Each structure stands twice: as C-alpha cells, then as structure tokens.
Amino acid sequence: MECRVSRLLLLSALLSALSALGCHRETRNLTASAAEAQRTVRPASLKNPYEGNAWAISQGQQLFEQYNCSGCHAHGGGAIGPPLMDDEWIYGSSPANIYESISEGRPNGMPSWGGHIPDYQIWQLVTYVRSMSNLEPQNVTPARAEEMQAKKAEE
Image (cartoon, rainbow, N blue to C red; front, side, top):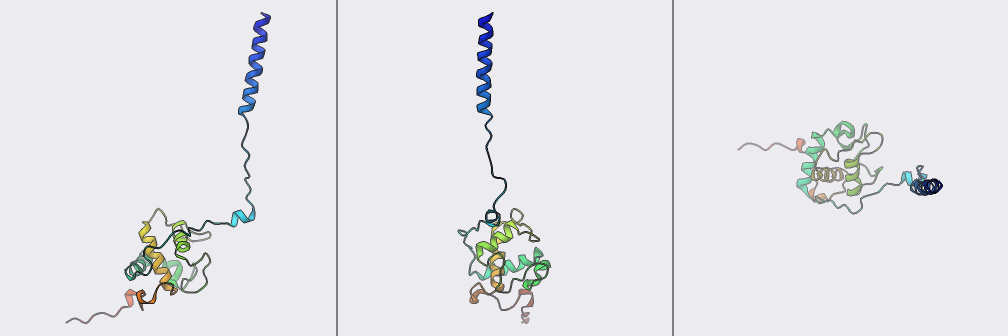
C-alpha cells in the first residue's frame, strides 16, 4: 500500500511539473509606442498599370461620378473630403498612396472600397484623381470633363 501511495505522489508531482511547464504564457506588448501607432505601411511596390493612359482617365472620371466621389470631394475641389486638385496631399500623391486611400480607406471619413470594387477600377480612379492635379502626362489628360465636351454637329 505504501508503494502505491508513493507512486501516486510521484505521478502527481510529475503531472504538476508538466502542467506548470505547459502553462507558460506568451507575453505581448499590447500598447504600441507612438511611433508604431503612426507608422503605416505604404505599398511602394504597387505600380499603376494605367499610368499615362487616356482611356483609364476617362473611365476613372466616369467611376468617380458613379461611385459618388463628388459627394465628398466636390468634383475635385474639396468639400467634406479634401480637395484633389491641389499640391497638398495628406497621405501622399503617389499612385500607391492613392490606391491605398481608396482601397483601405482613411480615418475620419474616407470609406474602404477594397473588396467592393475591382482592383482595375481602383487603378482607373487613381489615374483620374492624379490627372486632376496634373500628375498624369498632359498629352493624355482631357482639357475638360467628359460631360462638358462640345456636341458634334450632325451631318
């Protein structure tokens, strides 16, 4: 009987030791430093497949109206959302920065469109938005908005 009790005590001690080793908790720093909280990953490797493409600018302009971007950006002049026709860009004017703003959204207003519209349409919007600030080549940027083009005379 004494041998049996000692075996149970030994087994109990062994199980306690093993369970203590198995309960090691991972430590995590749940409070990010100010620098980490402000750091955003910029997709610098993203390249606009429509850069310098007049057709994409035209398509982007149509999408800008269809998705009611003018509701906040007032045809690029700014209203609730920031203006898109100036030199001052809050999150950067590179194609990758604009793509990220449209795709991921921004705090305090800009909704995330990623997953709601296809990537190629986001890139067309990027191309159009950049054309509003003369960031696209002048030879592909229309002189006026499509709805403002002169009607062709009928022959």
